[in-house]
Structures are given as structure tokens and as C-alpha cells.
Image (cartoon, rainbow over all chains, first blue to last red; front, side, top):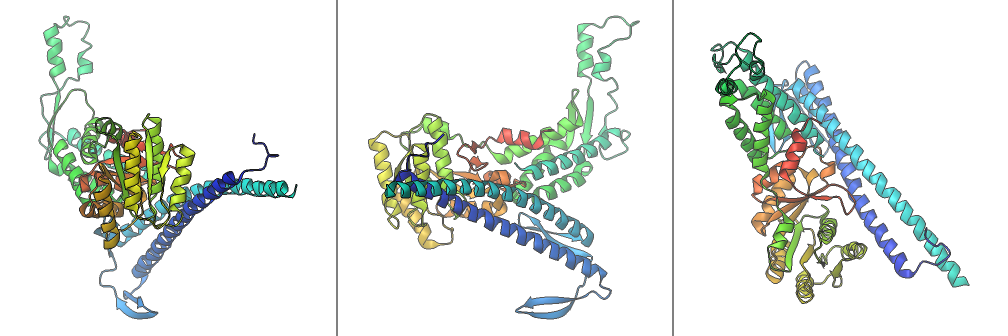
Length: 148
Length: 350
């Protein structure tokens, strides 16, 4: 066990600060990955809602957002057929129901990835907490040593 | 690792197996393919002769073993299952050229006559899938062997886009090489990103690896030149040159990389990207290779990638081998990419 009575030298404190900074940078990357996954999940949920709405609509008329808050009424010619990007930049035509199933599977995949990233993030954060505690102790020891 | 792809491949394997099984169970001549009428006796049945029969001679035994079921699979018999496999691969972000190659290989392996001695349909399918995957995965890249067979110091330049874990990869490979008994020096060539020099410095200190650094904002070519000079004068085995992350469409940054290449004359240029980027990683690797060149690829964060698309397709698509895959946060979490091992993991029953 580390000797807590001996003040930490400045070099050790600096190394701990570097570790903290590095873990912080890694954590930022994982947080942005989590955000991307969440955005993807929300987008897929929105697409499922739209596809279900299209099938439920009797006249096939939907409100199409064209950006900047502007929308137009648009008629879907073939609401039962969906062009779907399935991966590897490949787009295939799928029946509406199958497209919804595909998107639901994608959501499950994204949720599984979110779980993994969140676990890694938790581990990083607990390591950061540990370093923070050691840094705090080091500062206190240094201050105490300076007062003597 | 690649759990999603594994599950999907298992489903595709069952589907292919069922398609072929249905060919076997069809009466001969009823379908497009079928079973030749000659086989009747299964080898295991033949091995136990009736008590009343005379003891078979060695020649007879041999003849019985040679009697096999001749299975003929037509393209039509496996068309649906292959189409499903194709979608499975594309949905897993396996690049189109790699997907096409896998499908073509499996089709070629399965369609036609098969004379199998006691082999199950499943092993026929698994064999076809295994061979197809091994073909697109290539041979990998044995860095240790490369270092052993090339003049020292072996200079390795790491390139790639921002935020994919390049610096950490340099540290991990440094640790890996050190454990294998090689001496290593790291060049802190990322003089652009704030804190990058400190970051690689901390890694090097923690791992007990010598590092050559210049102040932030300095010329990375100069740092890496000094690193090579240091390695030469101190008889160091390997130079690991870190560089700043950059996108291939940033002309000035790419020309800086060109200068680095001219100055330090790397033996290997290694492109680093993250497995989770899927097909994007493949496209970026292709662009980097076209612009600055790449001899091998490292994929990071493979532990978080359930699809496995980038790992499966990168070697086939850009024609450069996958050297390592990063599988976690600690220094030990990097493994040489061994195609046979990956294929066994993907097709294994466990």
C-alpha cells in the first residue's frame, strides 16, 4: 500500500494530471459515440413511425418537411414499397412491413452498442474518480508539507 | 467481438444447409439437382456385417468405404439461400466487392457434384463459408516476422483520421513489441493536436519506452527524422511514428504527410481506423491508400463492433492486410489479426 504520510512529488502529481486528461479525452470520444448512437436510434424510431403512418393514411397524403420549418403536402405513390439503405452503401427495395422489421432490428443493435459504450464509459469514469481522489490527497499532502 | 455478424452467419449457414438437405431428400431426378441412385449403403452400416454373411475381405471393405452419396447441387437450389447470405453480409456493412467475392466463392464451392465420404451437409456448408471468408480476409500481416527479416531500425509510420485511437494504438503496439523482446522508440509526430505530445509521453513513460518529442506546433518531419536518427545510433529495433489525425481531403495536411514520408522513409505505412465506423472505415482506408499509400491496416474498438463489416472487407477492398485489431482499453488489448482464428470464431458453434 502507498505511504500516505509521504507527500507526493510534483512529477507524480503531473503524471496523474496527464492520466486524468487522457481519460477525459477518451471519455469525450465515447460520449460523442453515445450521442451518435442515440441520434441514430431516434431517427430509426421516427422512420418507423412515419412508415406506419403512411400505411395507415387512407389517401397516402403526408406532410413532407423540406427544411427551415416549411412543409408541403405530398402523396406517396407506393407506400407499401420502401427504399432502404441496409448497409455498405447498398439500397434495396423492401415491403413496408419488412422495412419496419429491419429498422427495429437496427434499433436493437444500436441499443446493444449503447450498452457496451456506456459500460466502457462507466469504467473510465470510475478510473477518473480514482485518479481525482489520489490527486486530491496529493495536493493536501503537498499543502500540509508546505505549512510545516 | 462481431457477435451480430456471427449470429447472422449462423442463420445463413442453417438456411444454406436446409436448401441442400432438401435436394438430398427429394427423389432422384425430381428436382433440378438431386442424389445419384448409386448410393444405398452408409459406411457405418456396412462396417457391421450381418452375422450370417462371410467375413468381408480387405478389398471389399475398401470398396464399401468408397461407395459414397453423390450429391448434385444446382445453382437454383441455393439461389434463395445465397441471396439471403448476400443481404446478411451487406446488412453487416461488409463492402459490396467483398460480399460479391464471398457469394461467388460459396456458390462455386457448393454448386456442382460433391462426392463426400461421411461428410454432413453442414460441414459442406461450413467448409464453403470458411474458404470464402478466408479468401476475402487475406493472410493478415505478421509484424514480428517482418521486423525479424528486415534491416533495423524498422520504421513504421501511423496515419489515419482524427479520434480513432491512433496514439493509443502506437502505445499498444510499442508494448506488444517490447514484450516480444524488441527495443522500441516512439516519435511524437502529432505536434498539432493540443495535448497529443503529453498523451504519448505519458504512455511511453508508463511503458518504459523511449520517446522523442519536440515542442507543440513543431515540424513533425523533424521529430520523426530525429527519432530515426536516435534509433539508428542506439541500435533500436523499431521506430513507431505517431502523426496527427487528418482527413484525406485536406490537401495541406496530406502534403505534410507526404513530406514526413520523404524525410523518415518509413518501411511500413499503417492506416489506423475504428472498426465501429464500418464501411466508412473501408472507404477512408481506400482514399488514404490512394493518396499517401498504406501497407497495412489496424482497426481499433473491434470489441464494440458487433457487425464486423470493416474487419471482413478491408483487406479485400483495399488490397492491404489487416495487421492488428484493438479490443479494449488496456495496453494488452491488441491482437495480431489472424484470419483463421476470426473465421473459426464466426463459424464456431459455441
